[in-house]
Image (cartoon, rainbow, N blue to C red; front, side, top):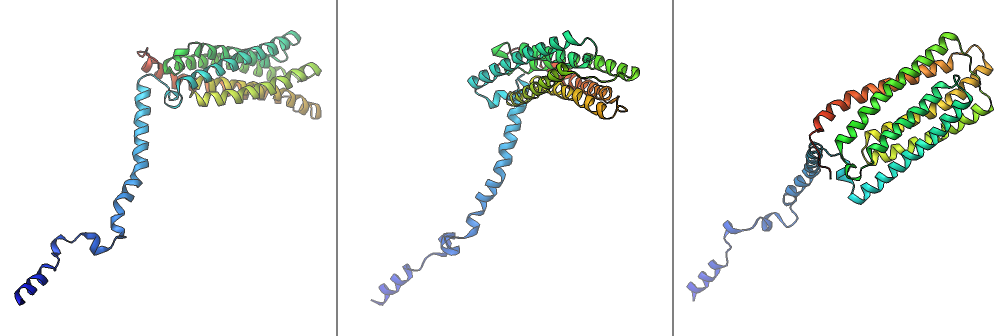
Length: 279
């Protein structure tokens, strides 16, 4: 009887070599939760690296970043909106340019020429999005930007030439009721068009559409600057040079933007010229 009792008591002693860590440290040991925390901390960085790799691979395939963000039907819907905005911009600015040119052959030449520039840039955007299959085409996008850069440089030289001529001849600003109305309408419409173009350009990741919006914004600023210059001159005739100075500033801004476009986009046109597959 004594041997069997002793053997039973020996069998009930647990083997310390097979005891689980949870029975020693407790079920809520913080060391058990540490590895998942380290994994979760590295997860955002891992996702960011993957997104950067995907973006780089998309660019290498000759596509814009919008190809990753937008579904096909969404891209086509925004493409049609970009076309509509461009056609409205062409229609509005063309009417304003013709109206101003019919009344003023020389006095508001910068405003007329900026309206003509807005028409040209919108026509380039229409060409950019005229083909539904090239909505994400990086090559077509970069070609449109190069053309816009050349147009910007040429127009800036004309605006600068006229502004310098006005300053050299001391041309005094004059605004009548008709020019006041044209300037107000031009300024308001150009600013509205610029905002819409900026929004669409951001969604479509289109530098050409954003550039067109920038040109519309310049047109709005130029329209309001004519009124400001005339009002300042009315109160202080000594500040006759304000209109010409603003023209020089706007011309230099457009020139710098055009040069920046060419510097950025010409190498990209060469890099993507071999890609003919889109979407």
